[in-house]
Length: 282
Length: 104
Image (cartoon, rainbow over all chains, first blue to last red; front, side, top):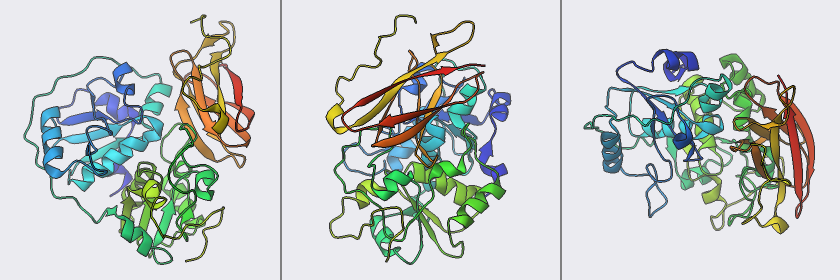
């Protein structure tokens, strides 16, 4: 993959608002953001109800994903352009999710909703209607999804990249600071994981930094690009942002997103946990 | 929107005793001064300048963070305005109220 294949600019989106086969999808942490205003023609996916199983902690299955996209009018050969708030955290998560289920042509709007708003581009409350389709997903591609046992086995072996803020990594905060801090799990990080906050990869306006800057950031942080990499955060959405950078922009081969992330790992009985600013020992 | 509540956002449902709250309102300065800015982005930077969180402002220009004890910086971005940095100290059990003025 490369920047050209996986990112589009706000101007490109504005120029292609009426292009057949281009489907804009907004995915936000604040699931009401779309309802207050969105890019013309964009449909909404709600990460809590559309993309998560409503009983177990897991994603919707292949059949549910197929039914969802069919009902929303997305075809297998559409170019899906994802965007959202929070510097595209949840849009990057949806991007990874679309890849997980084998959608070929999916892109992120560089800078997401914030860049669009800061450019003073138009938003509308009008909800588009799309013809239903018959969408076919593939089985989940587990070459890009890590589970808890892989995270534990990766300690001291693979690159573990914890992309939470330094205070969350060190155990001083349990959640991003726009959320209440009272949580069930223990604070800290997976021993030997390096802390490269996702935000290092983004400019203030939410756009991604240049490939050259990105390569330098991960090199300086000690990421060994001869090793496989697992990215994690708190619930797997910020780590999707970094997964996108490493896999799609920089072209690293073996990069997985651990969507269980700290809310799972920090609740496991008996696993090692490191506190403080240093990675800690295996 | 001149009727915004004095003293900031309601803290109903927030356990202030356990949280180090930073909250406030973004206003546009200059000739038209004092208008709340509903589509600004406020980011919370830690003492090393690293990003910790970001929120868009509400319809009344308000924002809120649940930080930790210590010194923080709020960086405010708004359309057609210069970014503004504001230093703030947070402490568990208290609410740090901040007013941010942006200008073109």
